Image (cartoon, rainbow, N blue to C red):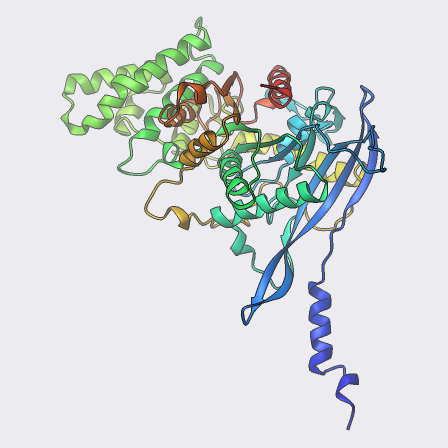
Length: 499
């Protein structure tokens, strides 16, 4: 009879194989670089292993790997050291950034705005043709702050380890805690607890940024210095169209007007004038009309239709058929229908011929289709050729693999983190907030974000810690060169600000 310890089918052997599979480690690649301005920096690219402490019979059973999170970190090379040979605590800021979706990698902020290299994508009406390219980003935020780009589970190269379930991390709380843990771990390993720390998020990433800042403070006592909110949504009820809720219909009106203006539907008028008129009408007469429903007189109803048609440039018949209420996809299909075009949602400046001119709503976003190719090509080249990281997994740019996304934390209530931000402003009297809005952003309309900020309980001193920046562009306003330069100049002031 064979000795069990040498039997390859024995329990011990099986256990060893299981442990071998689960014993994953970080797989970082480091490279040294120099910017055109002469700043020397190191890139660290790869997957950070996050572990969970497990217990058995009330005792610690070790830290088991749960996910491998892809990050790209850019850190300025140290110039000074303390006498004992160690590196002095850095006073240089560090900015942690991520996009949203949920389901989006950090590729957009990384290669569109913040990083030392950016994609050569062009902009609407002058898109760069395939195979695209990469160019230097002289105004990169790296000149003023170290950067850590984070891809949540199933975006980029981030994945759960063997034996874990991805679904666990496709939820508000679990995603919040995972990103917070990445930040805590990176900060600890790199001795950056005494560095000024900033979180920059885009779209759902703004909601995540506030939630993560709350988690960092509550769980680890880590206070961040600032929140950068780009294309903001802090309360989902301001954006989601569903029966019984009139608020999103009113909050989208100024965006419809701005997009119509871009496409020449308000000739001879300034954008500011068009938007101001739309905001006033949406907040007052249109908002009132929506609350009245069938109680409106025929004359009142007809007057609202006429004014909506003038502001949005939509056909009066369409407005009447929708009973004054339409979703963004319907607007996108209707605005330029006579020209055989649909407009984008992420960026209403973009247009494309729809699959069917009879579609009642846009089913494919022309703006996303236009920019995904350049960004995907740039990232897949850059990560290997310039950052030195190899991985045969597909880089998930914008994936549906994270759906369904769970908001069970908010069951029966709006998905809303504005109260978390209120609390952070109280607990951290120097916390500052940078906000970027795009007038032609159909995904996170500026008027909806303003509505949330206006309804937050804040003192005048708290409100003074906000800076608001408006751009004549869409969700990813940095596609437009002048907007990118303005954003980076404002972000420079934001991360280098001293009270």
